[in-house]
Image 1: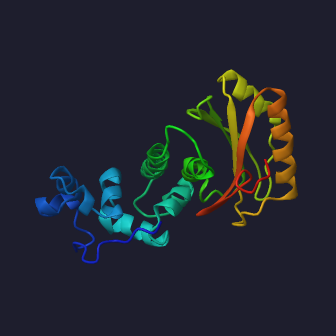
Image 2 (image 1 turned 45 degrees about the vertical axis):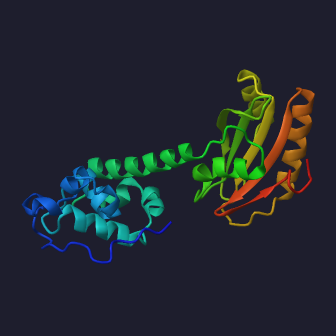
Length: 239
């Protein structure tokens, strides 16, 4: 999601430290006064990094970094420590702070959606979307549910290349037995943006469904996830 800066941001000379700003204009003080919703992403990040450089204040620095990410916190979170350290005013400690904040945002979003019961492919998709969106490599995750389709746990099974990821069925079955699951759902992403399952995906689904039946488990769905959309084997009648 692209996050835009306020249309009329507070302007200050770039070399003027934030501590010299008027109290009611400083990001930290505005946050304390209950104005967190009015702070831009750059201002929130400036609170975390604390200072800018000799040439620009922390807000200006973070606004510049975000502009290079097209205003996207998601793209910012994909940057490496080395890439962030290339900006004057950002060292390893600040870079790690920025990336840690982005990772916390991702994990917070993961907690936002966890239905009491997973009754549809859409429920499964929404559970995994925050984990898998924007990934540049394929990842395979498994969701384990109880008899009532209630959440037990979800586990990453494997991580692969750009267009393939190996999935060891024994790992899926072992995890299901360890947590005493009754139902299993599989989900993996397609970084290509094409949600159509491959022949290998079809084979994996059928082998896992058979293996689950042998172990008195039920594979309720296999989701192929892309940014903003998904393919469901259950909805397609292939399970």
